[in-house]
Amino acid sequence: MEKLKPKLFSVMKTYTKGQFVKDVIAGIIVAIIALPLSIALALASGVGPEEGIYTAIVAGFLISFLGGSRVQIAGPTAAFATIVAGIVATKGMDGLILATVLAGVILMAMGFLRLGNLIKYIPYTITTGFTAGIAVTIAIGQVKDFLGLAYPEGTVTIETMEKLEAVIKNISTINVQALAVGLVCLAILIIWPYVNKTVPGSLIAVIAGILMVKLLGMKVNTIGDLYEISNKLPSLRLPSFTWKEVGDILPDAFTIAILAAIESLLSCVVSDSMINSRHRSNMELIAQGVGNIGSALFGGIPATGAIARTAANIKNGGRTPIAGMVHSVTLVLILVILMPYAALIPMPCIAAILFMVAYNMSGWRSFLHLFKSSPRSDVVVLALSFVLTVVFDLVLAISAGILLGAILFMKRMSDVTEVKGWKYVDEEDDPDALSLRAVPSHTLVYEISGPMFFAAAHKILRISLKEDTTCLILRMRSVNAMDATAMHSLAEFLEKCEKRGVRVILSHVNEQPKKVMDKAGLTQRIGKENFCANIDEALEAAAKNFAP
Image (cartoon, rainbow, N blue to C red; front, side, top):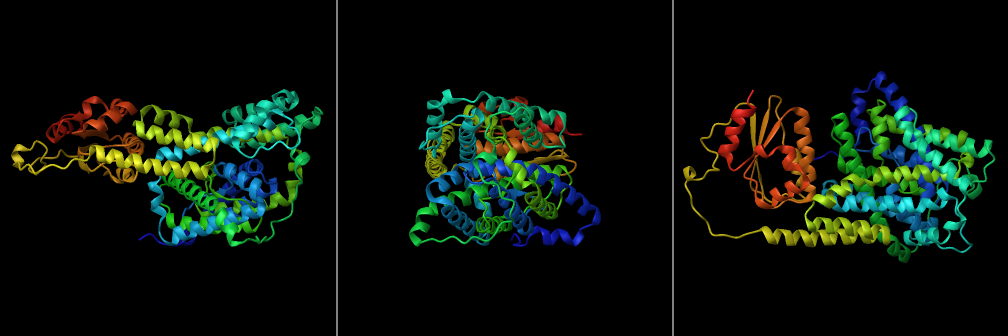
């Protein structure tokens, strides 16, 4: 059973001075990347800029210290922006603190109950749909500042549709100077990674935006015009609440907890593949819970593992939780020394940064691929999760998506499940019997039995290849159904095989999985010649074409 032990305590047994230097460098670089992002995401969440820094400091330190990943970097992320903004607008900061603390308790309970693996029961179509929806809501929310629009006093812009309506009604108030600053900053964010991958483009965009406004005397709103800037260290703040308020805020707390669990564990999986490690999912959930409680009590907002910052940590040499802790300490120094200068950052620059965040998190390629290639029922779940997130909120989107996904899954299973009387056949009459058949050297044979759907899709990735394997045969005669999540896992496994130079042969693929593969383009990727009618043909093809 998986240990409930922080990774920090494990890696310190073999820690070296050389790795400490690398971790410190990586932590400082990630802190520089996190600074403008934390400010931008805090503003998008309807709170002040320092709340974003507090989150990265407190939650970032606690999650690195207690987490189940070697390299996870935590802090505010775009996934929470819309739900946090809604809570702040309707229930105030006390409501947000209460929701975040409750979410932390839920996350800790999930970890102690060893429910880390249950996240796989959230279908890929739902996570893709609401992630794309969040990206759209963030982008819509930034149009006002990007264009420098002025709204009449009393304009209510809490929900996404209200924001869109306000933009349309007040488009005539566009500030050309604000638009110019926004376009320049956006151009820098797009072009800079091709010029220099070491210095973050967001930092260059912030400097360019400040210089444009100050040197050219442009009339553009800055953070200091709209918010009070504080460089004070976070202090303890206990929420006052009633049990009725707890009941009212509980759905939001569950949404925050589910989002934090999904995003943090997804980030762990991605980072595992980058450093050839394995995270402890239940310990990671406990750390996320502690981190969110700490963040809320010290003036922050919800936090989770940030994939982009975690990847930056890895690319710059970070290999232990020390890097994440250094990132938090560095942000403390930045907060105290440089935070007053954040008042100079133009709001169109913040909007441009958030446009890029929204674009990067949207996963529009995956969204379109799923929309084109998935079974119709999965497309319905994908579209519903996306539309409900944009038009209403995440609570409804996740709830409705999971419910509809479960109903459609049950229908799919009832459509393909058959009950038949036994038909007795001798092995010598069964072209798929494996006994007494010779398997060529350097060839492995695996048989997949049962439907391949979102709850079982991860098992495809468990197939282990030997060092000398050149060919893998997958027997699929018992697979009657396959969904989009399984296709995604199969595509990931094929990529792994391609990198290892292992060719894949499929034996006896049934009608429904074959149609899904055709539609998704996997048939062409695998090669039609590698689809065999039965095991005899597959073994013959392996011996003929792929043996060394």
